[in-house]
Amino acid sequence: MQQIHDLLHRALNLEWLTPEEGVFLFENAATADLLFVGNQLRRHHVPGNVVTWIIDRNSNTTNVCIANCKFCNFYRRPGHNEAYITTIEEYKQKIEETFAYGGEQLLLQGGHHPDLGLQFYADLFRQLKALYPNLKLHALGPPEIAHISKLEGMSHYDVLKTLQEAGLDSLPGAGAEILDDRVRRLISKGKCGGEEWLHVMRAAHQLHLTTSATMMFGHIETNLERMEHFAALRQVQSEKPTDAKGFLAFIPWPFQDEDTILKKIKRARNAVTGDEYARMIAMSRIMLPNVVNIQASWLTVGKQVAQVCLHAGANDFGSIMIEENVVSAAGARFRFTADGIQRAIREAGFEPRLRNQQYEFRELPEGMLQQQLDREAMLVD
Ligand code: SF4
Image 1: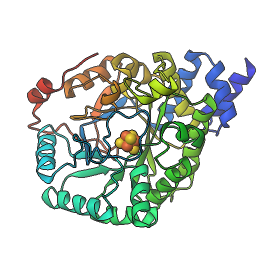
Image 2: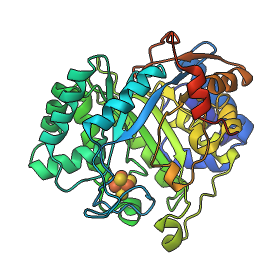
Image 3: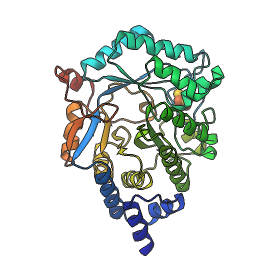
Image 4: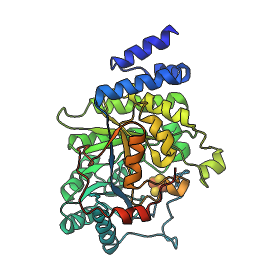
């Protein structure tokens, strides 16, 4: 069909397709054509045959949250007998384990605790950096920054600046879900709206904090809302200072439905097939011509689908994740060891390279406790 051909051709020229054009392509183009174009764009942005991966630990500051997202099984209401705030002693143990496994960063997130304000997080970051100066903190996310700003009556910029001065190295793109307020009202009403999420990221880019962007899809959103999500992200990326990295990566993953209120009340099911996920990876490349790295979420789609995605536009396999509690609580079951993730990348025809959060290559750390890691993180594929 001529229209599909023209749109794919324009995508290959890095033109910005409108959300409606994106929907048309997504709904009508053959999978082989979409994946071919996604892969060509990957080769434009990231030439060569390397696929990167990272070792990190996803830990949580607290599971106390007042946002009540309908897809979340992780949080506990204030006062619940399973509510916790992670202590410094617990962080020490987690960080030392992470270092022993060859990791160098904590991906640190948590709930919207009603009593934990800016001082708490700034003190925490300062303490962790004083104890471990080489530790990288990839921490919080726009909804938590919005929550802290509201508690403190401060701007996003000032909250981020204080946290950056206390040791925040980069800001994860968590809590984006779908950046449309119709969807957000239905699934995560207690969280910041789409515009505020984008505003936090604009402020982070002004501070030269590197960030990532995400999308959790396959629940109650329309295809147009997915494409509008892409359009909003590329707009914010285009506004960053020219010497800031902005969104270093985009990571889409399908909604995990197990035991979630969203499944029970809204009857939303995780119905995203491997084919649809690979098509969304290709659409990520097509709709985000100003984002360099696209990550396939093996944690939620498994090894084989993630491997296909490396031929659809993805150039990163994400983390082996020594600890992960949020999507796992909603049914994500896959695990990789350091060996397993590299083997999976090679099987797909690529050369694995360990990276840091800035997407710079790292050598495999000497003395990495490979056997221990192999024992503790079981490969399921
Ligand atoms: S996803 Fe985050 S903000 Fe939403 S309820 Fe869970 S912990 Fe709270």
